[in-house]
Length: 460
Image (cartoon, rainbow, N blue to C red; front, side, top):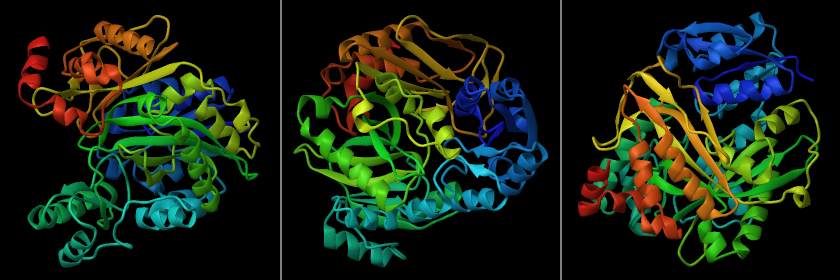
């Protein structure tokens, strides 16, 4: 059993990990930047160490400072959360070389999946379909044009590293391809320190569906069902749910096929820990591998709600060398869960970030309502990091029950002093197409079009 874990992250995920550790009777060490001195995770941990100035490049992305903090506090392991260094193979390798357990996949598996172009080849070896695209990195705009003409427009330009929608652009012709190519490279360099991009065919009106897996160090791998993450804005997820309405209503046989595909990819990568295999599905029920996220996901709570499995605790137990005590037949999917990401943004001013002091904060409650957040009254949201301040999760006996609880919970959520995305998510929950489960990744784009946007703003 680990005695002490350092949490190499901030915000709601740091709070989530600390809570899991407390329930396992494991002491925790929080790290924080100067801007996060008053953050909830700092107050909740048993120990806290400042690792630098506000910019993440001078704090949460500094491997040397994280390792120094781990050695000073004499921890057994480091949990990276999501974002920052959570998918950095070098960080995992440094942890291992310092005899500190990295709570995540091995550096070997991380490296195998770090490059999205490489992971596409891994999927092909597994016999899993991938969208047509470049064989690897696209080195210049001329090569990009040749590839685009070969596979046909529209195409997606994608960063090989990172995630969260950064370094991704859709191109419909040569002009937008050249512009998107350079923009994606620049954005990827700033976000991940790696400007490499590749190109793949853009599937129009796609459904973004991902499968949660758990894999131990003994070769046991299971999946815990799918999450539908199609409600996105600029490739950033806004609302997620499980089970997927598309699979439940139209393609029930896909759950078994895609689950097997996810497990096969993890097997070939010698993957351990929690991970997520992401797919896109077209209107005909054809699915294609996108990428594998080598970390805990933002939206992991909805899987926990319908399966009863604590994924963060499972990560920790796997890192300790414990075998999975769950088999596929033990996973029972019960009910329906939905998650809304609560961001400090103004949805009616092009989602402009709204850092600042929270004056009043009241979180919703009641049966079937869960709030994962680090926000509180008096907390000042710094401008240096992601704008997400919390996640609202509802669970119901079926989809309608979960939606009704989410609508009620959103109406109860009270945050003053800053703008949030709550009014926009209330509009999503009332939209007839969302209520019917008929949507794709273009849903928000359509919701914000013309008269419908005016109606939303009027209601808000």
